[in-house]
Length: 577
Ligand SMILES: Cc1cc2nc3c(=O)[nH]c(=O)nc-3n(C[C@H](O)[C@H](O)[C@H](O)COP(=O)(O)OP(=O)(O)OC[C@H]3O[C@@H](n4cnc5c(N)ncnc54)[C@H](O)[C@@H]3O)c2cc1C
Image (cartoon, rainbow, N blue to C red; front, side, top):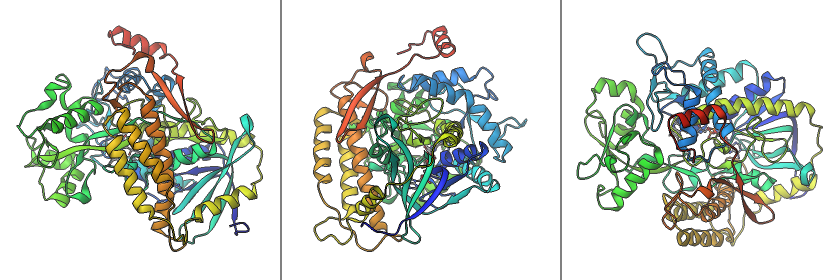
């Protein structure tokens, strides 16, 4: 609607998202001297990060003195099936202890050993115990700690504001991010935030699947907006299916049963009472990598050894009840509340659930800048850390390590960036785009589009994939994308309109997942192709999606692993492929 009243707000560094990554980036940008504004769709302290349960990794060596950043990096690279950017994985492991001690200094209270060291629990596929935790409420502690630091510094943080698109200026190699358009959900007002640097920390996209542990908003706004603005997406096909999600009641389907249950000794059994992990990874058993455990459960159920609900059992009831209540307080309450199951006495019924996006926006290792100048990305919205399979506990580490790097780099960039003038026509076009569905007579409900997208993704692009299935999924998606959507009401707290935004962004993200999954003709980590069941050396490459009027895909080679990690792996005769 040209002529619409737009409120323009100039800022130096605009941080989009108030989860762990956004908060850490805001602190770093502020401490580097920038004026920062943080915008979040959710209320403060309610971002997805608060749901994180099991812990945060840092090679402190408190319990296993042999641990070091080198082993942490090697585990991350190996279990990510060598698709992580080596420099990024190495930086994650190197910086983790410093960031963890910083959280402690800022007031986070981690669980302790009786003699006062930080307690570290074993997590799947880690060589040593390195997952620091606060019971099974680690994410909440992390967010509260960071939020207190944001408030202490007087950083401007606003809630219930949704970003609709990124703004850019220039073209070709001179193109850069200059801000974003937004709607204040409380008032319905339309804003233009003009920024010298933008940090995108808007979380992942696992919600595009029907069964997921991800909350309502994780439809991939970040990757979709970055793609539309011209930034490259990477490895979008790599979606982690966590082995243990709730299977009933329907309202609780997919909710995460934390890996900490297995970390604290929980065992998996099929309907015949067999500890079936002996068939899939006899050495590491329940603490194998997530992709292996998820596929094992999927196979048990597919081959008829699941429960009538299409699940398997996860049992920790052999441990003393007070231990379970202390270590897994949230799980005890959750299973009691939803199912009336007492996990200190009975097993849980669990099945895989879409959990985490390893894919996302491509970033540079030392700055977290995307391929679009002035746009930085950090946290689950970015790619490069976890490759084809994320190690449990590595996401929270990612948030604080790369939040810090992105915030600092954005502040530096902002100091040198010239002020940009907004293009009024671009802003008007955006307002028309986001309001075009109001009052349409010929459209379908965005909630229906969302539901159909999530169903087709579960059917065609979940744990097992094939060319035929992916092509069918893509055809269904393209048909859906042609359907107009209709919304009533206005921009104030309108769930229908938010569904519309979510559905539009999900369509972009799902196209990228389906096309990338089709292109990757091999099986690697979370990406399992029944028609290409082997991992192929020539596919040790990242897949890039870029907007050229249509979605264009290309591959990108990975650099070599650094000498310290390479030597450590070679000394243990580990394959580097
Ligand atoms: C149940 C559960 C348990 C987990 N446990 C662990 C664990 O123990 N250890 C671990 O390492 N990882 C764990 N994870 C993963 C980890 O929690 C997430 O990957 C991580 O918290 C993501 O943080 P983030 O800051 O990138 O994004 P988020 O915390 O998702 O924050 C995103 C922010 O962006 C905002 N946003 C999104 N779109 C827009 C928009 N268009 N406009 C404005 N704002 C927007 C949101 O409102 C929010 O403020 C778990 C995940 C789940 C679901």
